[in-house]
Length: 324
Image 1 (spheres, helix red, strand yellow):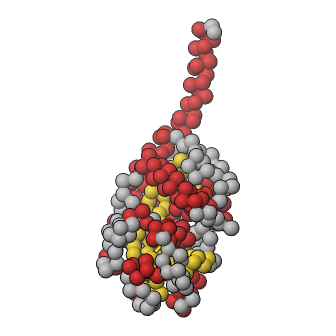
Image 2: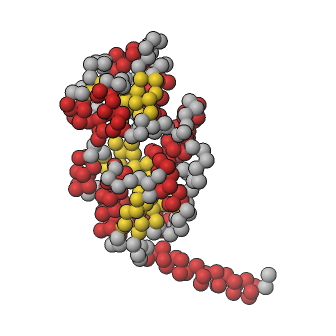
Image 3: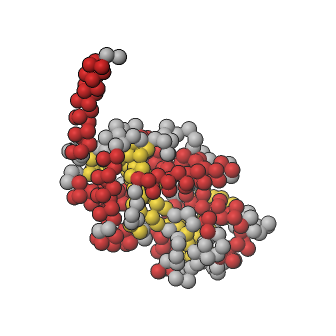
């Protein structure tokens, strides 16, 4: 190629790239949309609005929450994956949208890893195994009941291939149990039936089962958390009981479409780190039974997503679980 022509083409490419590079350096120059794949009022929505408030202040642009509920979070996740990777559309990721749903439904319109740019893990929350009052007194009693060959106990979940279903199937498998699954349309009706005596066990978050534990209508048997919970000091962790692999928590993070630029990610990383260190935000999360995750990053969150998805996908498929 003629050297003069090559130089002219190179200069033209540099000039063409300058506006894009300038946009990345100036990010954000307009409002940002934060897609929540669930209905208003739930934990994911509350976390998103708290984070959006913090990011709006630190990025000096409005961060507007957009609820796109449906298909177990798939519709909202699809919307994020299909957006331009310019940083102006981001989304809430969760164990449901990026681990359980893709593992149970291989025909989704997004890949939980390849379709997204991980930004940061922001919140984590324990799950608690509970039994109806008077059923068993501790985890050893639960284990014995789960292994019964006659009149096997049952467990309720918010639905087929929900996180509650996955957690109890992990427990069933680890214990060599014979527990019978009873799917519901949500956690609330399952909790009501457990209290009424129709169900024997379930696993859910403090927000769902906490009030029943406090009132004595449910018995807490084990918690999925690194340490014992301050308000349930007599309830052991799965690790203490010899089952560290059952430490399956409810987490929330921020992702964008695949292909986001490093300069934009750096701005998000700094703003989210400052947000997670805010005492007011930490206090709000704590009031919901959550922990504000410190020192996350795109690389750490990406590694976390990959590990969690691979392990759960293998297990769910081996158990022939599905969302149908």
